[in-house]
Amino acid sequence: MTVTIKDIAKAANVSRGTVDRALNDRGGVNPDVAARIKSLASEMGYKPNSIAQALATHAKPIRIGIIINSLGNPFFDKVQEGIEAARKSLEDYGISIDIRKIRGYNPQRQLHEIRLFHENGIDGLIITPVSDDKIRDELNNMIREGIQVVCCNLDIDDVNYQAYIGCDYYCSGQTAGEIIGTTTHGEANLAIITSSHALYTHEMRVKGCESVLKQYPNIHICDYIEAGDDEDISYHEVLWLLKQDKKIDILYFVTGGTTGGLQAIHELHQENRLKAYTFDLIPAVIEDLKSGLIVSTIDQQPFMQGFQSVRTLFDAILTKQTPVRKHIFTELNIKNRYNI
Image (cartoon, rainbow, N blue to C red; front, side):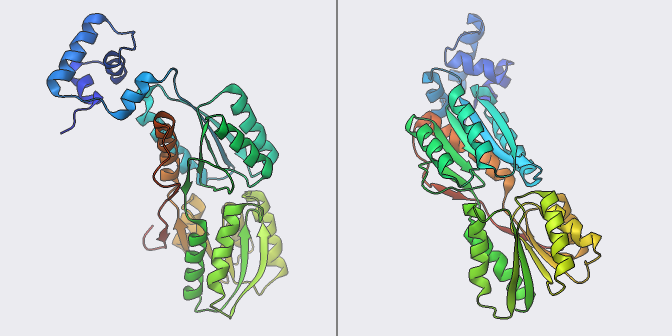
C-alpha cells in the first residue's frame, strides 16, 4: 500500500502542509519536528510523488486564473463545485486560484478579463472561450509566453491549448437528434433554441442534431432562436414563438436558457401539447422531467469538467508535458423520468 503525506501527517500528529514543508525543506517547521517527520517517512517507506518533486523546484506558488461564463447559467454551479473539489485536493501544494465570472458570451468582456490575468501574471488559465479572433490571438500570445491554457466546457479552434475538457458537442447533437427522431416516431415540427450561431461548439451541437434529423423527412425544423444562454431572452423569445406558431410541438434546447423557455411553456399552459428535449440536470429540467414535459435530457458531467480542468492544468504547469489526449471528452448520460 502506498504511503501518502496524509498518512505521515496522521502518524506525526501534524498537518499535511507541515509534512510537505518538512520533506521538501521549505522552512517554517521546527527542526526537531522536521527531523521526526523525515524519520517517520523513512520508517513508513514513503516515496515522494512526481508532483511533490516538481513543486520542490518550482520557484513560486502556482497561480491559476479561471474565466467561466457562469452568471445566470445554473449549469455552471456543478462546474464550480468540481473546481472547488480540485482546489481542495491540491491545497497542500500552495495552489492559488482566482475565478472571474461573467454573463453570457460577449467577446469584449471576456477579452478584458483575459488581458487582466495576462497583465497580473499567472501560470495557467482555464477558460470557456468565445469563438472570436481577438480572443484566439490573446490566448496564443499567452501560450507563446509559457502560460498554459485549458479550455473547459467550450472548445475553440486555432488555439494551441493544452487540452479541451468537456463533451463532444457534435456527438451530443447527434445523440439528441436520434432521441428526438425515435421518440416522435419521425414526425414533428421542431424549434431549436441555442445560444448563438457564432459559438463554435454550440453550433456543432446544432449541426450534429441536424445531420441525424435528415433521416426523418417528416421532422421539420421550423425555427431557430438565439437566446445567448440568457434565461430572460429565452423566456421572451419562446413566449413570442409559441404565440405566433401553433404548429410547433417540439422544442430542442441546445444550451443554457432552458429555465426561461420552460417557464414560457408553463405560462401559456402548453405542457400537454408540447414536448421538450434538453441538456444537463439543472433544477428546472429535473422538475419537468418528472412532470413529463421533458422527454429526455443529456447530462455532460459538469462536475468532472471543472475538476479535471484544474487537475490537468496543474499537472501541465508542473511537468511541462502535453496531456496524452488534447480532447478529453466527458460522458454523455441520457436521463429520463425513470432514471433521474
